[in-house]
Image 1 (spheres, rainbow over the protein chains, first blue to last red):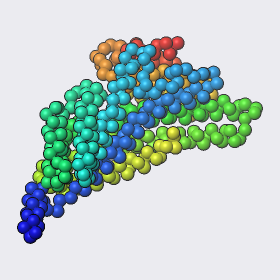
Image 2 (cartoon, one colour):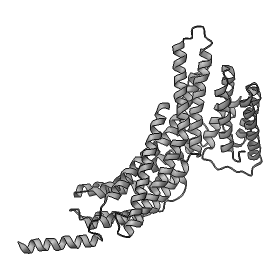
Image 3 (spheres, chains in turn green, brown):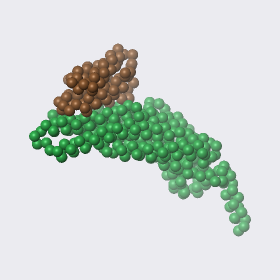
Image 4 (cartoon, rainbow over the protein chains, first blue to last red):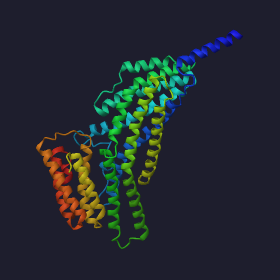
Length: 318
Length: 108
């Protein structure tokens, strides 16, 4: 019996030694996964907002002028495209691929978190499938969205799959850390490229940010136009006019919030890239609890909170 | 001063929106909206496009957009000049359409 216990202790000591640090925590990887997933969802909302603001603008335009009626074009968003126009559909699809890049980034971050939290073989299998799907998808969608190849080829994805499979049926911490190290290091160039694409597309002064702010401002103009038509009617009432003014005010507030929301999402995407790069440096040094990574992940979490705040302020204009 | 068609459209739409949102004459707002609609359609088409900046029509469109934006700013200060802003913006939209060849049917 004593021999069995002693043997177990030796094995445990060997496992901890192989991990590089006896008190290593995976909390940073988990924190990164949770914050990045949340931020990707908000960035997706920014793209969807551009689409919705286009359709809303059309609806307000038609509703604001009694001489107009709706047509198919009334319900087409920025991503829907106009197939009747040369190249319209291709442009819309290229733009929509940005959403797919975000989805893949979110799936990658979730799978990374799942890998850090996995307790049984089934969890590992799920995380492995998530990683493989996210990274394979990211390569395809990034190419469609940007016209450039992602620095993530079959060799990188193969190495990641092998490392994750090597964790085994019983989750051994040393092998888990080795797998996380491989995943983070191999995927980092792809994460950097994808986050730069998103950060560039969604800045405060980006085309999409300006487009959304102007679309919301134009919607407000249609409400005010409808108000000016309404106020001259003999049957016009205070309550109807007041209701229209309240709607115009909601749009006015949303218009003012839009640039800040886009800036927060863009800054957040850049923070995801910085935090992932810090994680890479940390795991390369076998330091799963580095101070730099902690600081940058903390900043990332601040960005997530900031984006959520601006997102809520925009809901008034929905 | 805008140096690309994208930023020129964006600046002009921004100023025309301000003019429309600050006049209280419904008919003027309706006239302005016809142009803003055409500019939005053009904007949606060029939002991620790379165009040949050395093309003569491209340069003419930039000049026209900048002129229209200047006229729209004057109208924002003096709302009696809304008609001038509409005329100038119509010319700019036609100049842009000559480059992107998309929305000419929307301007007639």
